[in-house]
Image (cartoon, rainbow, N blue to C red; front, top):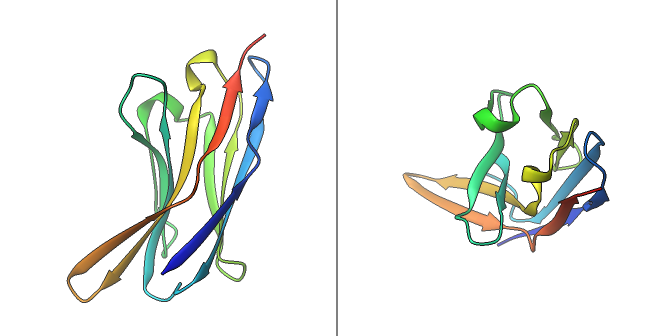
Length: 119
């Protein structure tokens, strides 16, 4: 099992910044990607950003140029720097870790952290 502890959410005004952190522990071997998803009320959970072990990144079109994902492999931690926040970024943000064991993929989720962008 993998345990994920998230931090960094909160209330911020439009145009502001927040940094989310997610620390992984437990069976962290064979992790091949870490990322962030979000879910707004009444909407499906969507990928925000992901980063592989090799450092390749992917972003949702809606956050490109504003959000940056990074990871510290020594600390088994993934970060999401969110700049120029908009009200439509308001959602619960979930950390995700994907492990690959052979051909099988396993997803693990954090408990979620609320991000609210409002004046």
